[in-house]
Length: 447
Image (cartoon, rainbow, N blue to C red; front, side):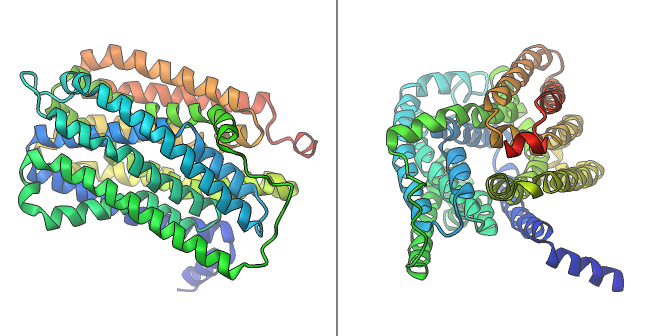
């Protein structure tokens, strides 16, 4: 007991460990809720229907991410590095981000509607006929703008160090609303035809709730900080300026998404929807590692930004502590999940156990990806984004080429091999350029 109490006291007294622990708990809650959704989908829908839903989730997430053009990254960077008392700047920056993301979302929704016939013919089919109607895909386009609202609000909360609220909003809110609608409309859920409508409605509901919560939260904070610092140096950019500043950050988010989901999309292109369901289950299980990683990212990244601007002498020590924490946590999670992989797959249905080999490869791939995360932060902080973009594009090209070759040879295991090779490439390039540019040299940081 004395050892446990000592460990508990150390965690409580260490802000990094405490916030990381709370973020992990929040992330775990989000993971559990998201997997509750997937379990219902795989156990109560046909395998083809499950493949349709999970493929649509992938497309909505991806198109929404691309439509933000890095504005969420810029929001995190500017708000997290702003002075702690400058609440006016932070809330005004959020408002401008709202306007920019809303306008961009409408543009991408229009493109989505125009391309719905192509999406239907190329991805949502069982090899003979379409499994999703044009009207379902058009209505699903609403998910783009409302999913962006969820992400933008959660990013803002993490940037102002309300990490747990931000993590819960990003990972748990959409799952909660989907589960709620599934329970209310259970009769319709069991019919494959209405599941996509319920998913779209859940995004509309979650986006609305996220916007309302953040508005009330910031209003309350403004009342409590009527004498908040008005820093004239920090000027909120207008719509044009915010787009100009965010676009260089966009490839980081876009290529990172493509690195994760390209294999799922290409499996949907080459293979029947039944195998899309199998691979989607394996890939989503492997994403548990990313959930833990993102929880630590929500704690580490804002602090690195703030230290670089206001406390550079502590940057090096904090960086290596954070890197060690990330690697140890992810290594432990990967090992546990690999040992339990067969049991986890059985929970989705006995027919999904065929994905065990793909899951093992994907778990290893995510481990390599996780090892690069803190090093990647320093490229952004030190404004070496162009090098990080080159690395991501290179790894993405490797991923696409390997998918084209290996999916047709080995099926879903081939897609997993492609992801593993791409993530190894990513880690090697990140470490190489990190040391070439000496991103942690104190003399350079102080200059």
